[in-house]
Structure formats: C-alpha cells, structure tokens
Length: 227
Ligand SMILES: *Cc1c(COP(=O)(O)O)cnc(C)c1O
Image 1 (spheres, protein in one colour):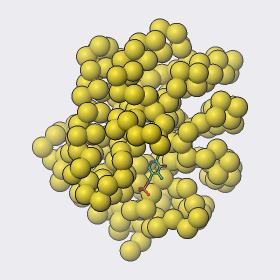
Image 2 (cartoon, rainbow, N blue to C red):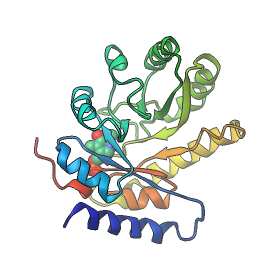
Image 3 (cartoon, protein in one colour):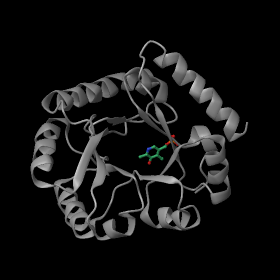
C-alpha cells in the first residue's frame, strides 16, 4: 500500500476517535530514520506535515536535501551536537535533563532565537529509557520558565513501553495527560504550552484516545525499517 493510502487510513482513524472531541487536531509526524529522501518527498507530497529524526548525523544528511520540510528532533541529544540542529528543527521533543536545557538555552541566547522544546517524560520509569521522572516535571517546568528565557516549553513527550497489546499502556498515556493538564493549570495563560507528543505505530490509537495531539509514526507509514 502506498504512503498516501496509508495516511488516509490513519487520518480516518483519528477522525473517528476525535469526532467527540472537537478542536482536538492531531499532527502526524513521519519518523524517517532509515527512510530515504525519495520516500520522504513522497510522504510530504501525500500530506505528511512534519518529519522526525532521532540521530543528528542522519538528520543533517536529510535536512541538506530537504531543508524546506518541517523537521523535529526526537532522539537523545548530546550537548556537543546542539549547535548542529538549532535553527533547523522546529521542535525538539526530547529535552530529558537539566543540563541539556541549560546548554540549549545558552546557545539559543547567542543566536538570538527562542527554541520550542517538549519535556520528555519517562512515565513508566523504565531503566532503559531517557526522560524526566514524572514527579520531577512540575519543578522542571517552573525552573525552566524562570531561568531559560530562550526555551519555549511547548508540552510533553513520552515513548511508552513496547507492548503487544496497546491497551496495556493506556495508563501511561493517561498519566501523561494528567501531568499535561497539571502544567496547564499552573500556567493557564501560556498558549505555547500545547503539545502532547505520544503514540507510535503500534499504540497511536490509544494515545489519541487519551489526548495525544502529535503522534510519531515510522513503521506504519514507511514499512519495517532495514538497518
Ligand atoms: C522510531 C521512533 C518512533 C516511531 O516508531 P514506529 O514504531 O516505527 O512508529 C517514534 N518516536 C521515537 C522517539 C522513535 O525513536
């Protein structure tokens, strides 16, 4: 099945789920790790609005060829690589530690830009995953708002545990939404605080049911990855 058909199916599924929640627009991020430039172009023409990469080098190679697409960074970011992506990505989904916030802010200040970021939360507290612990998020948000004027914290992101039955991770998504609403309640005037990035190929329906408004789809759009 081609990307365009796949995308239509996914959009229909999202429309069905959000029919009862007017105003809940869901952005589909095409995750393009291992996907070549031609396929990315095809996806863009089919209507995928934005693309995500999780490795700096791979991102740069694709960005060079497709600089006009909307790119997001979704992987663990080393501080010495921040400069390579600043100004090129519209959103960093993976702010996962304090010193990364400090370093992005410092470089953004020098460039005179404000960088939109999401706080990555390790909601299920998995050893193998990056991200803030859920109980750290509120303080982190408040400190970032106070100290990092060149960061714009635009919401939260999580990578849920991989499970065969996505119903098992519903509590993870629900916990994320609760955390997101808690931040919104703390800062009701902040309209920039707007994104809940959660849900991947195997669990995006449950994530959208629980309030995701950015979903990150690789395999479902582009097929299995060949590393
Ligand atoms: C690879 C990746 C995805 C997409 O995974 P699929 O299961 O192929 O949809 C989403 N988010 C992040 C952070 C990823 O690294």
